[in-house]
Image (cartoon, rainbow, N blue to C red):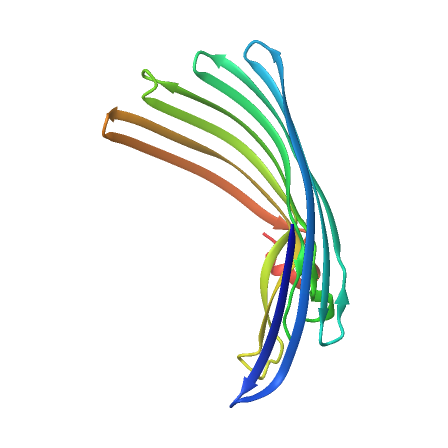
Length: 219
């Protein structure tokens, strides 16, 4: 996959341009993935999948910035399912996903803020799901844990304290975050034209290991 983007940024006042930036950005992404399911015994199966992605980027602008960040990302999942009873299945899943990094355009972006890194999500989930009442009802409950590494967050910086409009928005890889909780989904079809749904979830989350300049993200 190839992505190209050319941009021209102009900041003006009363028709006069006082700051400008022309930039060229290109990203070439190559990915491969696969999955296999292995029957272990009656009612039990193991599923293993993986994905590799390589993203090569090139950024050049009229301010003489030339960057060529390279992201090599690896993710995958391992799932074990077991039929606990008739129409009731339990499962456990471990997974690692990712979101590629990139480049922040803008006339006021500082050199150290120009590039942001990939984000990774490591998760574990265990649950039970099944149907009942002649398959008119469906219930599912799961417990999960998630860990975000190098979380990509959007920030606004005021470059000039005397100018309330001088804000720059950038994406930064700034912190680690953990989350865990439980969720449930229930559905029942009373008659052909009427279904009832009930869902619920509890999530606890915290962020930590933020960079010193982002201490407000802790908690």
